[in-house]
Length: 132
Image 1: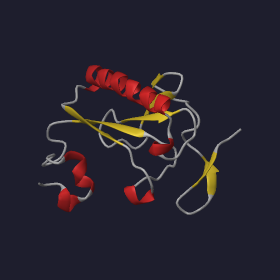
Image 2: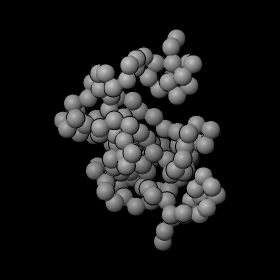
Image 3: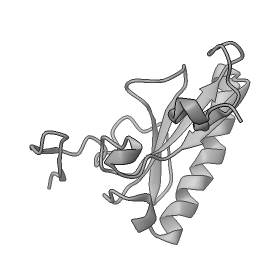
Image 4: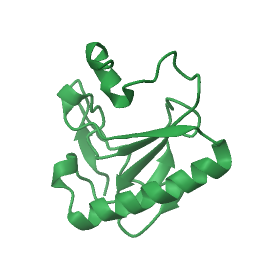
């Protein structure tokens, strides 16, 4: 059975994350795969296997499984890409930038010099609030 979601235009489309094909890491409740449109080399997504749109609707067990894979993802990325840091983030809702309504945690490796001024990290989603 194919899981269907609404795209930004209101069309019903197959959820691109309900299949764990291409998974790099996994456990019984979650899996990780490389982002098709990476922000930086090595950008991974960690997702619950169950289709759920909102982070706050995941179970405690799913969250624990996701965070366990975040540790594994970090180790993998350190070995394979040697990043200098990481950003972790979840977009919840359209107003927060969520475009695929299947929960996913972004694990974004960061590299010295990848942006002119990284200060503020994820605060940069609202540029006027990046510096404090």
